[in-house]
Length: 450
Length: 186
Image (cartoon, rainbow over all chains, first blue to last red):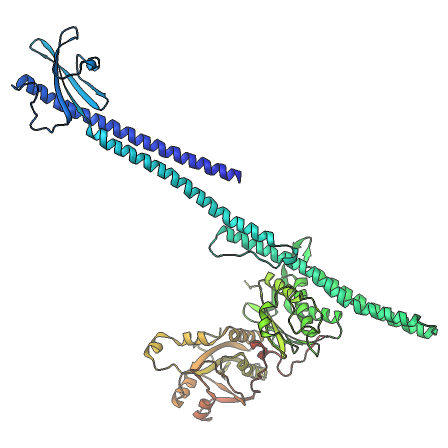
């Protein structure tokens, strides 16, 4: 930030110096031009006066030059001087200026506002200096006006430059500060927040977009872990309870060896189910990151759907899944999706287990079809449905609809699935009728064949 | 793509059947096409023409300003197009082309000439299927086709397609979960 400030100030300083130099140069040039021009005019009148004087008959004072306009305060004078440069006789010349007059030629000089032009004329053996003096109206009035104008323009210009550059700087800093404020609000408990992206902000918009995508990845990661924890704590509880129950019952009194054997067999059976569930859950908890890189490869979506169904059955054997693969395309290349198999499996198994969980018949109906640029997966259930006014909130993490009181769950599965589908450039949508059932539609883009 | 109008291609008639399938541009009506294709035993190559009746209206601005393609683009929703694409990819070997068209008059002579001009070789007439048109200019062509006279029609295929199931939550439900699919991997 400091470098930016310094650069800004340096630029402003350079601009100001340039403008001042420019203004000064204008003033200097015009002034010089005005002086030179005026002297020339004085010279002309002086020559005319000399001409009149030596060749005409008029007197020293009061004669006018008929064809030439009279300048402001114009005075003509003649000085007679001797060989030693001392004045013998003068008409209307201020003798204190005698030193500035050149005795052998022409001279131009200025005293205050009055300009003098003199020339030496030898006449009939005597030395004469003929001169004209006048005030430069242009210099006194117009140049002053120009000088004032340029000064005001300079001041205003500098002010303008400073104000505009500060405004521009603030307009760049302000949205960044807003972004900073928004990011401060995002923490591990509200990772679903996203930065606002407006279309017309250029580079900052891209920054916000990149940030949002990063948040998508982080949120998916978080939610996968939470999903695993909630699933594990719920699903692993049941077999453990039954193992403890069987063991307690067997130990409650003396029993025959046969009865103990039976109890042990039941415990082994329950433990094996527990092992199956744990490996299925661990499989789901793999977030698809190998060596900390998100690994996207072409995967067969039909294989993933079938694997997801197996996983769901492994976790909860009361669930039933009916698959309709009748619309599968002839060409299996149309089922290739660019993505991460574990993540997609996680998403689909979450939706399928939701479908089974919230229906009385614990059955989910899954269908798969391929259209031109993508695949369509339909997961349908005949369960309790979602109330219409709550449909807008189902993607909020931890949201549970009002009719789910009798069903356990943490409200993580659907937002997680949606995030995963979004990461694969796909679309997840839900339609539902309260009391009749729910259908989840997932569309994923397939790999374009070259 | 379903939206190409009148693919005028020179074809050898013996190879490919051109089949007229009535539709109301809902995904549910694609079941008629699916029934036909599933019962297409000898893997005959077909071109499907999905036809709906449409009244263009009397306004001269409408008639001059809108082409048949404009009307078709408006009538075919995204889901309908996706359904058609799915059917095409499933029956890639048999369905050579599948597109939609409009029948703009109920006049018998027009219908006869339409069938002749488009070289339709088969007409599918679903029994007991009720079309549901969501656009008020559309009309049902089943009666129109029947009124032309069955002897004037090319080969007629009658299919027992069950009427609309009204409890579909998602429009795409209609082409899945029909009778006879009971695969499960459990």
